[in-house]
Image 1: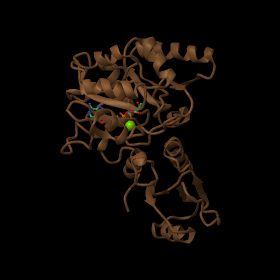
Image 2: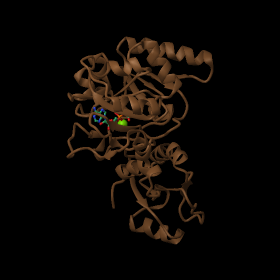
Image 3: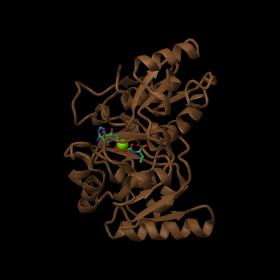
Image 4: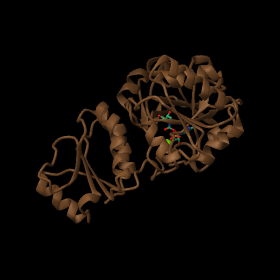
Length: 335
Ligand code: TXA
Ligand code: MG
């Protein structure tokens, strides 16, 4: 199968791509679409068979539930048998945007979407293309990130093509994802919102709306927080997080890690090691929004160039960096 890649950079292209995507989705197909966080692999959320295709295409374990994407409040409440007040408060502040709310599921949601669980993750994305497709379809879209299971999320159409190009009929190119890491996932089924997966909407911002916030899945229950599974956001290369005093220190640490020549990639955000002793070094911005936007593209670039070791400079310990630190920790192979 040769994948169709449609651009969206003029109104004419945009509308043609919406029409094509809706056409395929209404027929139960799975297509890759841009969102502001990362690209999604979308299918009709009401259609059990279409949803099953998502798991096949990704090679995703059926124990890991999907996020359902909506484009208005009615669609969101259709996903839940009992839409919590807390969800309304958080949604009115952060939607459309990079926030997923875990709520009690409605009967309309097939068991395949939630991996058999009683809750469903719902998100109203900001990206105008994704919104237009959801409205055009008239049904919500179940969509995980558009990558093979255990690989890095895509932030461009090219990333999707490289990973899934042989397996899906359509990729819509909506430009580079503006947020760059996956949404913040918050369980709002209890009194206090619980962050299951940190993201660029931080704990402080959630607490400012909800009065309080809790972190982490409960008791490590697989169904409640499968996103906490290790090996979920990894490049193929070994990734380590390090800080260094100066370039000599960095070179020494790379040596200790067994890193050799061209196979080593360094991603820094404070100082660029420029002596030439390390051939692949890139500096990305030291401001969290811009760092998140750039990170996955650099990891993909390293993978594509055949990197064996990626050294990422340690990021600050601060609320603004929580989502980034979480992804780096999961992508890292320890050591
Ligand atoms: O930004 C995003 O969230 C992107 C875009 C495409 O919207 N989607 C995404 O989907 O990252 P995925 O499937 O790669 O990650 C969804 C995460 C997983 O960690 C999953 O376990 C968790 O959300 N999740 C989904 N439904 C859940 C539920 N009912 N309870 C707990 N966690 C849930
Ligand atoms: Mg994913």
